[in-house]
Length: 340
Image (cartoon, helix red, strand yellow):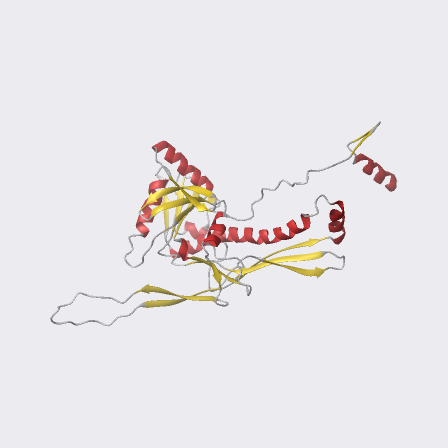
């Protein structure tokens, strides 16, 4: 009975059996694949060379918060007061991001012998590294750790968490101009007489970018257009820091009242009448850094073949050791919460 059922199943795999014709299954050689394998932010940081080798574990650096103080004095009775610069030590623990796939030896060889999808093994191995990059893209904004020096989870400390900890969070209430809110916050960052702040980009949830487009259409506001990464252009706004690109990043979240996180609600309460909160981030990108550990000097995930299991399945693992540091989180950047 089992053999008969198997034979019937095999016969059913033909599309048509008839006089002078046997039609069998055949597939296009190209696989439909428009899956996301990176993010605009991660690609931008690579282009800007914001990945750099870690100094160790933890990664350490110094930050200068003030220069020596000066005072006006009587030119005939000069009486200076000795002061000096203010420098502090910073550190950030290095994290690990990993992905693994096991490949059946038999199924790989059957696929290769058929010839039609002979390249599929190489593609699937490469996509293990893509999985690591996608996890990095998610953690860039929404990593769940809360401390760079005393980790509470295995993930990065996301940029949203670092900016919230720095306290530079503002809101644009429902009905207010989002464009004006962003431009005013850029100007506010630049009012610092202590730090030479100059934001370089505004990152947006795509739905926030859409809301800005609608506002511009309603008010006849004209955007500039700039190249963000090679071959890709985005809208840009004129600000006190110059023309800043508006970069849609799907990994930036939007919230409802039920998903609004505690680390934000402690700074900005959910306003009455609001339905959604779209997130925008004003960054001075040359102060954003991803420190990595790799003796080969590459920031890209590495792929290792761990050998065959007892069933001859191959094990492939991709791993990256790195972290995210938003330097100057309390004075050089801003988190903008736009409610609607």
